[in-house]
Length: 516
Image 1 (cartoon, rainbow, N blue to C red):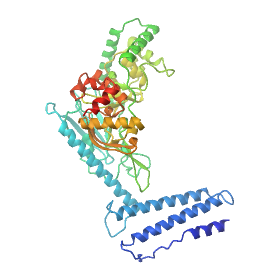
Image 2 (cartoon, rainbow, N blue to C red):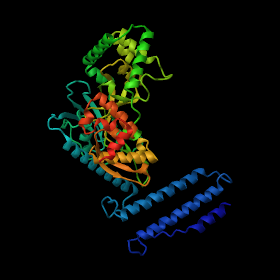
Image 3 (cartoon, rainbow, N blue to C red):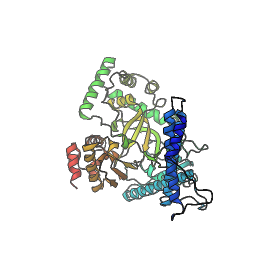
């Protein structure tokens, strides 16, 4: 049987390789002959794979060998694609031209071209941002104190209210993206920034950098530079400990002064339940926006193998005090945790009402087990969504009407592009979303290029600017986020060019965007 299988492979494919120094006779320098050789080898490999499969688990177990043939087949496909890229001049091969490039060199050249694309995209966003800056507001001055070759940086700025930072950590794929990322922290959004370099200014990277500064098995990893944005909340708290404890103490006293009942466990639970019912009826939390609007990365897959790369213009972190009323999404209704630690919020409320400042801080555990939120910028200030931790404390702070709460804050750049599926839109809903995006572009609320597909869900909006990302969500979600934004920043949407009648209902939102 093995003999017959080998004969079958030989009969199905015969490969004549050109000898060293000999090129087949054709008009394109031998490329046509190379393509024929690659095609014949692929046929042979497929035949060998079938032959091994015919023997597998009969006379021998050959699963590893079959997989090896499959890997060789994949390699041949990548070789063919790389040759096509060179012959069609879709990519410029690295120098010296006298030495034919390796597959790795062609992949590296692709990476450098992607870096150029990211730099161009960042420059375009920066130009647009500068054109929108208000001359009435003085620039926010940033001091960049560290910038590593893997894109990791540390920066500070002077926050007069001492609510955020002052230490920020971040990552950008190219130096041109630094100002784009730092601008995302500006309040209002049209406030300009100045960047002061207190370290050596960086050069363009000679590799495609791993998202965040380091990823397992990424070809762009640098063993000497592995830092990623990860602000230590305890260090940030201790850097200005007296001011933070004083702020928390003032809130504790304010909660006690406003408390409407006695301090029994039953009364505390009843008051919290009444407050939650009122908020759920009058100020409900907004729905999820869709993963594509809360994740800055897009996946880029090379046609030369090596898996996909997470590509974005940057991400950053700091610690600070945020307004609980500006938290638009936590994944549930106010104070509705079902069976997941339902006694936690009453316990936190009781600590604020009866414990010492230090005891209450231990119960809230703001630095040891941090609240984590993602910041979503807007024209007058940000909204937030709960990240992977802190739901109970965010609810407790809101139910107690605390003006601020200490959290770890992540701020990302806008994604490079979005498609309707990124906002959970398919079929007719995807068509509706595309209609809304066209309206946003026409009204100047977003800037970019919309590439439509016969399948609406696969259409792509290459994004340069939008006044706030949640405008790109499905209509019902967009108006829910608009309602939260208007409560936190009354009149800001109107001032940005979005009248109140536009976001009252999903239908009114679609109608307003269609009326361009």
